[in-house]
Image (tube, rainbow over all chains, first blue to last red; front, side, top):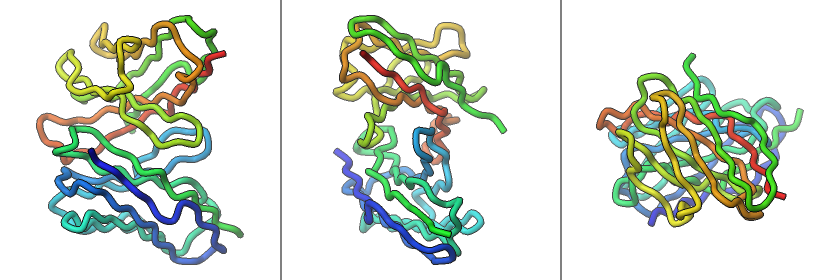
Length: 113
Length: 116
């Protein structure tokens, strides 16, 4: 069974800082990995998809890396802004664990102006 | 941009009643999912659906739950005889698929179900 852990659980930073959010997963036989953003009480917005053959994916100020063999992914947020405040969820798409996304508990980010 | 649409956004029901949560996936997508998120907890997989049948389901998805795609566009989750512990946000997702799992999952905005 796939287990996904995200560290830290919560993070509060001043505006402008560069951030690193970490995700680890136990079953490395995955098809891909997605990072999502969730605002309080809202749905899941897909930020980045990293396919199993890729090591990195970039979108604007966001960069995600994937190391399948070690079961790790990192989301890097450059020059953070108050509008980045949200919960960030990591979700690998399983292979052995079944063809579905398995979610971590998320990192709750607060960026202070 | 195409999006997954869920209705209603919020539903309050009495314990023991049946509820139907509705989703309109992205057109031409082939794989459909229901997930739920109890307040303060992780998003959990419930069921996947492909080619008009269930592909996989979790331990949570017991006989109380059922899914169907009645008209080729809507994808519904029915919960019979709701319990207090069914209170959660329910998310629908769709994936283009076509046998290639290296594709992005798109989620709806969710239905908040409150059982009283």
